[in-house]
Length: 195
Ligand code: SF4
Image (cartoon, rainbow, N blue to C red; front, side, top):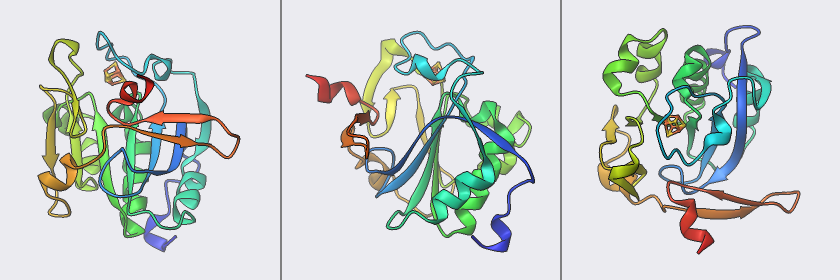
C-alpha cells in the first residue's frame, strides 16, 4: 500500500461479506465489499440479511486495504451492501485507498447522488468513485441488468475511466465456489442462476 492509502487510524467497518474476485459487480475482475447495515427499507430488497446494523463482522479498514492490496489480478474495488453510505467515512477511506493502489472504484448506493453530496463524507466518496449506481430499488420497476436492479436507478460516470458500454456489459450473475466449498451467488440478478 502506498503512503497515500493509510486509512484513518483505528477506523473499523461493519462488513457483511467480501469477495476477492467477482466479474458480476462491475467491469473486469473486482474485489467486492458488502458493508453491513441499511435502514432505507426498499420493499422487495433482495438482500435483507444485510440490513441489521449490528450484524456482520467488524473489520479494520486498514486490514481490508491490506487484503485488497495483496489480491492479484483485479482491476477495481466495488462497494455494495447494505447501504455503504451509512458508513460514510469507511466508504470514503476504502475508496481513496483503492484509488491510491491504482484500482478503479464502483459504488452501489440506495441514495441518489444529490443525497450523497449532503451526507457527511459524501463529497469525499463521490470524489473517489469512478462509477456510481444510485437510487432506491423499486420492485415495480425491476430491471436486473447492466448493474441496475430497477429502471429508476442511474449509472453515473464520475470519471472518464469507464464508458456506459463497459458498465452495461457486466454479467448479471455469477456463481463461485468458495475455498470452503460453499456456493456464492452474486450479481444484480443472482436468481437467474437458481432456475
Ligand atoms: S438500499 Fe439496497 S440494501 Fe437497502 S433496502 Fe434498498 S435495495 Fe435493500
